[in-house]
Image 1 (spheres, rainbow, N blue to C red):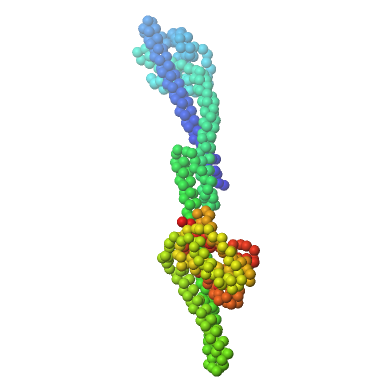
Image 2: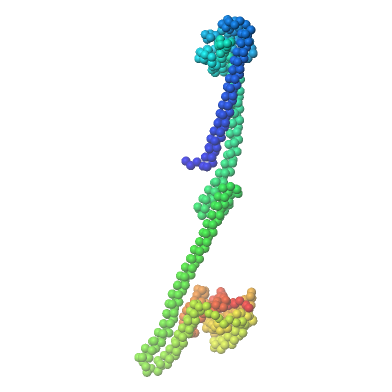
Length: 482
Ligand code: ADP
């Protein structure tokens, strides 16, 4: 089972506190015990010394007969000494026989060993229950016996037990308080670690935003800040990568579209160029076979001329268009008033319009742009020519020019057959025609609008087909005004 860092720290802390308190208590209590022992040892040694001095003094005052002296005075001595030191006192002669004691004291404790040591001129004692049996030799000029003090340890034991209880109580209180304080501190600490763990888990799951660094001025704070910056860096890199990926996808898409467009373009070129050539070749073959046929000759002349003209126009326009698409031409740009150009073109187109009984209605406002006059003429002629070609008898063409928002606008609108919705996106593609026959009858090639768009854009302008009702067409061109 996986133990959490909080549990581990808590257990470690509890063990540390208990061990520290136990060692401390043991050392203090042991010190007290040793101190008590030293105390009663020195006290008893002093008592023994005092007893000897006392015995010596009495001995000097009385007879010098050693044996008789001890027998005669032992009882009195023990009483006096006992009343001075408050301990049970007994005297033994050199045979080890007890000859006097301060009070009848019936202890069944084996004291032979310490007695025999004391009889050999040595201090000896033993602890028996709550008492210390202390034996010391007594002398006049030489050892005459042994004196025994029975020292009660009751006070010492009580004191020791009180201290022990005190230690247990204080130790428990210190343990609980320290544990609670340390637990709360560990809790704050582990909370920070858990937050870092969560942040790393979020990064692992790909959630980079929303990571807030810890407000700590230590290694954990530095680590958190590191994680924060790392997540930001990863997010930026991923975003950048995604952007680049998207750009790449768009570029590939564009390339594919371009490739497709090129395929269609080549297909169209092949088809459009083959058609007039086939017509010419067919007439040439027929003329080979029926060279005397006057009608065929007439027909051939008219159609070959027409197809040659169409072929010539197509070659010219295709070359113009592809050179515009390939190279950046330096246009002969100058300050041009679109009103002047449009006036001139309307005059030129008036004749053709009249042929179909179409009226040109002008509403022209002066507007200066930076443009190539020749190209502008080509653009407007193409649009007006289309408006005539795809118009109806008695139709109208509206030619307007005006300035708004720092742009010069030119509008060519007609009341003609209109452009179907599905064809609107394609009319600027090279060789695209809505109706092949109608276009062909008017000498159309499907290249006019592609060239117009290229030329407008090369002069920093835009052209768009207005989304109007089907039976009407409006083109709007805009150029930056000067
Ligand atoms: P074309 O030489 O065939 O006229 P364009 O590129 O000029 O070629 O025009 C492309 C096609 O857009 C034409 O074939 C025609 O179907 C359509 N179109 C262009 N202008 C108009 C218009 N004013 N009204 C209706 N259809 C138009």
